[in-house]
Image (tube, rainbow, N blue to C red):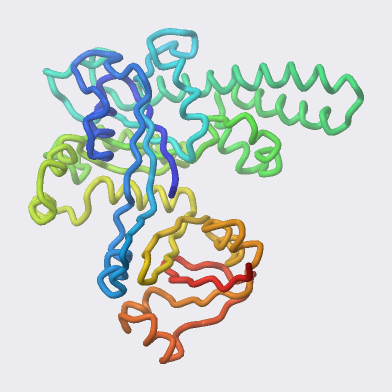
Length: 366
């Protein structure tokens, strides 16, 4: 799997509509009342990649396996969700395990869709959600601190140091400051706190859900979200749930034509996945042959040996060499055989850093 994203936001901001459009399903209920999403919805989506399509057209494998992204849509959060209000708090545990958070913010007016706060105000809505996520993490840290301090009474210096880190992070969060920013400046602390899966330390992406007329972002609501993203050192993407819902009803050619008519060259799903890869510092490499062409996702700076382990631990354990062709070379030659004949296939060792788009064959023993 490529990565996983948890989708959060107030009720009736378009979370379920966007989830259904992104996952090309009708799994999530969408309705004009709060809490129509009760159980968390999960959708695993193939990652569109024109490079894999091109490799397949040349190699003609019997099987094609794209990498995937998982979306997890939880119930809408409201004020005091962390204290038990609404339905959202009980589902926060489901997004503690994801790689990144997508915060859907309503940036459209529609009298037919009620707003739980009785009016559209992105700045206020963002503050509500961020507060609830922070309070949920504060609760986790408080319980963790009590437990670690109790165990530290044994005299273990490592536990005492850990209690100090938790206490400092808790103080930052309690003062309304960003845990993510604090841990960015104290990366060693992040490792110590990793077991708690703090929501507010995860890579964060604001999704401004606009109407069709403002897909270019030309509306004051989007500026409010952009300001929040800048302040929080988060990523911003502008997307229209209505447009995405329309796209999944169209053929591939009609969808492309529709997007072009709107001045867009990519769907919201493609933009979101691209931002997600950038946010999480991920790259894609490929394996290709007569049997199968497959895309794999790894973190940037992954070595060839570690990438081999992504396929199978036995391949990593018995790693000998990696035969590597860059995607640009393959694109020009359209053949792995020609790439080898023309000297464009390289033999790389275990410490080679995998580049985005590499096509790799792993030599291994066993």
